[in-house]
Length: 288
Image (tube, rainbow, N blue to C red):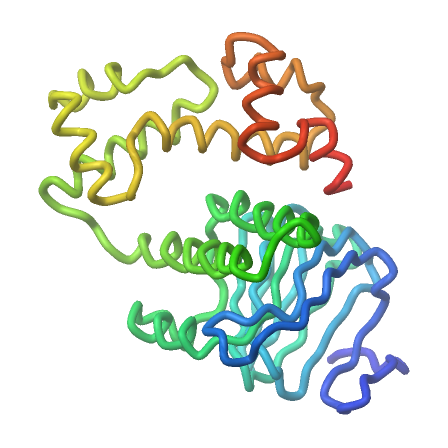
């Protein structure tokens, strides 16, 4: 049974919360007619006294557990949360979540309004499910924080990128429910090889040899399924992995460059700044 405490409440009386002192929150005001309207994006750092409960959520809550543990109750269902878990709490739900007292979690999160998102969850047959173990989604949540941090540099139209990231999370979760066949299986297998080769000098030619297909066929099928070429996908994944390492480790920029098998630190730093907009060192400072 939950210990009763005198938590502060919001003006609408539908939320109580514990310590939020270690939480960083970016608040937005947008157009409620837009299919994805962000209320807030944030980072919750480890805090044993962190706790939130909503009698009726006004918006969708989606969160990713980076490290540590926590617990969740939503519409009468109880869950234990651990690193790599994504949980999605629908609008109108009654829920509460808290950090584990001995190993409080660190998490990245987004609160948003979207009938579209909930309809697509239903189409994917994910409605009524709340917790998914999907460590591959961490890069998406880092991207959300990145977008929130650079918000002053973005115009309104570019905030559509947030919707793209959220849909990417949903697609990754839904992908676990399906098994591609035929040419889609070739593209999916290539993606697995590329995902598993981030810390090597894997080439597209290496992938074609392992799959016994030509580069032309692989590129065509991969682009058809994922909307980009295998090479561009591989490079983008390496940069996403670099972001995670800058976020979650104390490795130097050179060490990260070496581990990801870039030719040298200067090439890596230059590429990172061209693609992300800031240097690796500045990106690390942004998320700390």
